[in-house]
Length: 440
Image (cartoon, rainbow, N blue to C red; front, side, top):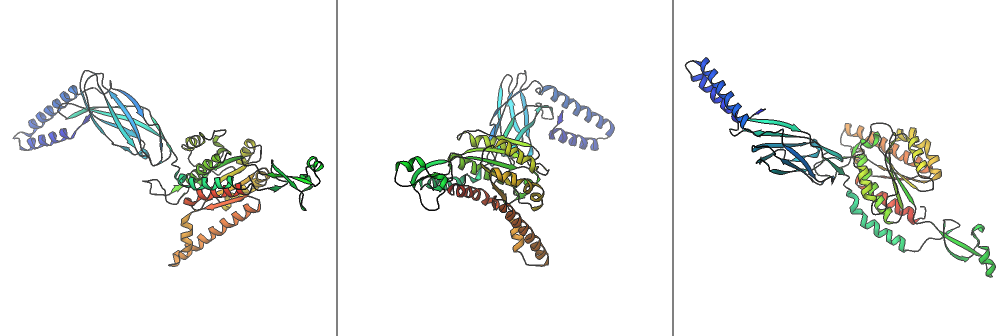
C-alpha cells in the first residue's frame, strides 16, 4: 500500500478541524476514523496489481552513445480498471527515460510502454524490476506491487575510429595495386625467374631453368600478403586507468585505456580483414577472458564487438607468462601478434620482458599502448613551484616510457605509443607499413 499527496492534504485539513473544534479529542478521533475509512474504500476500489501480466520486447543490442527501446507490455486480466503509475527500473548507467509511465488499463486490455535507454557504459544492462502503483478512484491510496520481468540489453563498443577506415583502405588498395616487392631468397610465394646477379643467394638458383638457358637463372619470391593477425588485449589493472576525453556523450571522465584499446583493435581488425588476413582475438589477464577465432570477413566485426562488450578491467596484475603460453598454443605458425597493453616500466620489467624472447622468436610482435595526454601537459607547465615539481615527475614518467620502448625494440618488437585519439590510426599505419615492407 502507498499513500498519495491527496491523503496528506486531507490529513492536514483534518488537523485544522481538530485545532478549531471545541472538543479536540473527539474531533481527532472522528477525523482519523473518517480518513481511515476513505483510504480503505479507495484501496478496495483500486484495481489489483498481482494479477497483472507482463511481457518484454524491444532492442537487445545498442552501440555505446546510441539509444535502445525497451518495450514492456502490461495486460490487465482482472475485472477492474487499473489506473496506475508503472516504473520500469534499470541500472543507473542505462539512463532509462521516462522514469514513470502513467497508464489506464481497462479490464481485458493491454498497454505497450516504451522506455528509452541511453547507456553510459559498455556491457550488459539488465532490467531490475517493474513496480506498479494502482490508484483508487479517490486518489488517496494505491496498491503497490513489484514484479521481476527480466530483459538484457548489450551495449557494444561504439567503434568511433571507423571514420579512419576509408583512408586506410585507400592506402591498402595502393599497396596491393603497386609493384610487388621482390625479395631475394625470402618469402614463401614464387613470383618469377630472372638472371643471376652478383650478391644473389645461390640457394635461389633454379638449376632446371638454368640448364634450359645459357645464363644462370634465379627464382624471385614475394612475401605472403594474406597472413594471420592475432590481436591480444591486456585486461589487467593497467587497462582500468581513464585517459583522454571520452567521445561518448554524457561521459564526463575519460575512457578507460581498455576502451581505447578496443577501438584500435576494431579498426585494425576491419583493415586486416579487408586485406584478406585471418584475424583472431584474445583477451587475457589471469586467464582467457575472450577468444574469437575463424570468423569470416563479414562476421568478424560483429563477433568482436559482441565478445568485447561485457569485458571490464580486472584489478589484478596481468600474467604475462600465461598470456605468452596462450598465444603460443593458439598460434602455431608465424603471425603478427598485436599486444594492446600499457608501457608501464615496472610491469614490463617483471612481466612482459622476460617472456618476450620466446614470443618474438616465433612471431612478429607489435606492442601498442595509450599514453596519457595529462602527462605531456604537466611536463610543459612551469608557472609556479608546484607546477615545476609536477613537470619533473611527468618528465620522469616520459623518460621511463621511452626507456621501456627502447628495450622492447632491442628485442625486435615494433612499438606504437600514441595519444588516445591517435592510437587507432597509428596502429593501422604501423600494420600497413609492415605490410608494405613484406614483413607479414
